[in-house]
Image 1 (cartoon, one colour):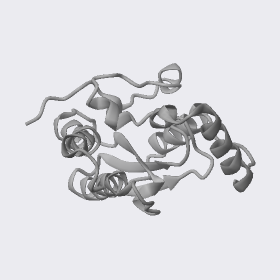
Image 2 (cartoon, rainbow, N blue to C red; image 1 turned 30 degrees about the vertical axis):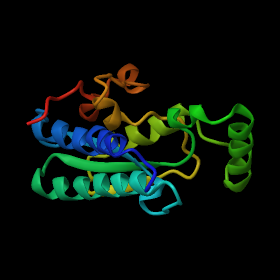
Image 3 (tube, rainbow, N blue to C red; image 1 turned 90 degrees about the vertical axis):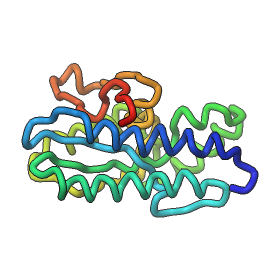
Length: 178
């Protein structure tokens, strides 16, 4: 933490937390509509040198809990994805491969999840109209790009949902501060 560039820390918080806040604040969502924020296991399982990411994920989950109460009947849930994301692309290939193999061995399903696994879980959360102020942590999840952090980059993430006709309000294009 002490060696991290403060501008990078601000950028991470701005993209993931404030991006989600801005989308929730400005998005037009029908009653019963749903947001699924994508956090990560570090919100509950801190690791050395990952304090900021854990804190941002925890803040995002708390935001979802509060918004579920404040903006009801719009629903807010969060998904704690676990393993491999594009942020790991900077790892040396052999180290990444070894890490993923070791993680797979430790999981009940004996494999690292794929983007489609994460998308299926998120779609389940979007479709369950009784679910709000709730989380889901997939121990086999991997590779689903953080939809909310992508808001800061102005990208639209639709993954399999578009094919299945599920609107993803949380994957909106960039929302200006304010």
